[in-house]
Length: 365
Image 1 (cartoon, helix red, strand yellow):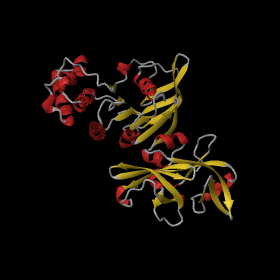
Image 2 (spheres, rainbow, N blue to C red):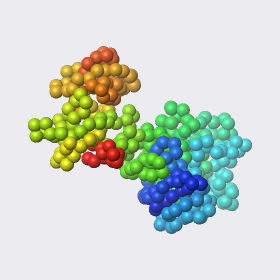
Image 3 (cartoon, rainbow, N blue to C red):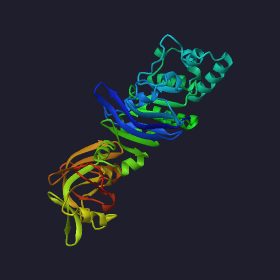
Image 4 (tube, one colour):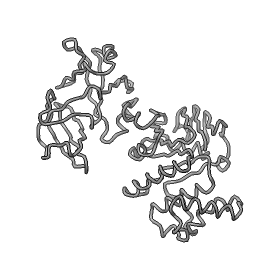
């Protein structure tokens, strides 16, 4: 297992900085997901850790040892790719054995390790097949098993589920978490799929334009996003954001926007609101935290524009004055009839509200 540290790391391609002075500590045994859109720098950071691209500035450390400039093969890190990178002319058994045979390990050690890894992955009955005879999920397990054979210090996964269909992805997510728990090694997993990242990570790192927007436990990033980018990127549907100002209405702090007023008298830490009075602010709330009903007392009037069936849930597109809102409801809490075109009442629970600075994009409270 390995503790991984990036200290002010920059990765540069020509005149372009793909990673910009990133500092991050990944604890020993963590399952870390690097999440972000294409071009955010997550894969470049992973490749810098693997040694595939040089670091233009800063340091990469494994267990406190600086590895800048050390040959990739000497870092003892296992890389698992999106395209599996299996040897098509070799059987599953031979693919598994290849790293240890290439290292000149004795046959007895290879056989013992093969039995342990194949058993862990449930591949005992497939050892004599070729990759072309396997499903996508089975091929992915072979790629993981080949990496496991040599007990690396950490596993680096670059979009490992990208080529799998939706059903296989769900199964492989469970397999990866189970494998991580069994092996206890450090996993660093690059993905653009926030559902995948939230399901797998105990350390979630959201990247944007070569920098880290926020890092921490997944529930912390979901519940308390540090920036507008994280609020919009993590969560489906993304967080609702309303542009308005803070004002006092009868000595009560109130969020005011076109066509609506939200009483903030019971917002936690409301004293901090007073420092923003009269200033523009963005108010955010997750779609599942809005309270919607046909007769919610004290609610604001809104119209249902679209109703989407989503299995156990219903997603509503609302129009509240000029403001578009997304609402996510458990289907058994819905009214039992189609709501498209209906008028509903919307309540903003004060304890669920977040506020952002529109100029910096950072969360204020």
